Length: 101
Image (cartoon, rainbow, N blue to C red; front, top):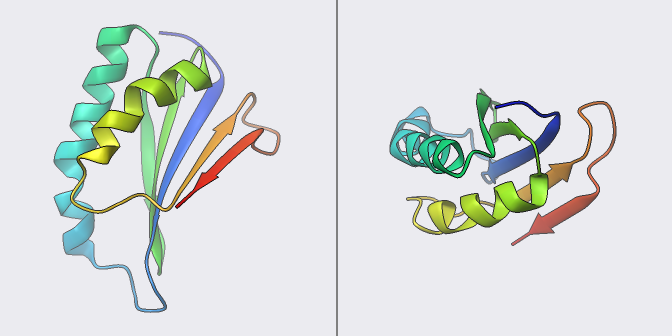
């Protein structure tokens, strides 16, 4: 699967430090999201990043809008609701779509 469009799904916590146990709880969701993208032939997970107050998942593929259409129902079932989704046409620019809850 090739492409350079991105979907970044963020789980932002409060002012408290983001608990590592929550990141572990999201593992099954990450794997399900990666599998859904692969089955659709649209992309793959590129990694994750944990910060003091949040957690981000990075997906890369061929069509960011179609990728989010596949990912959205997977993340609707996540044990923690996402707080922000950014869609990028290029890894070098700003997101062209930002969704928040």
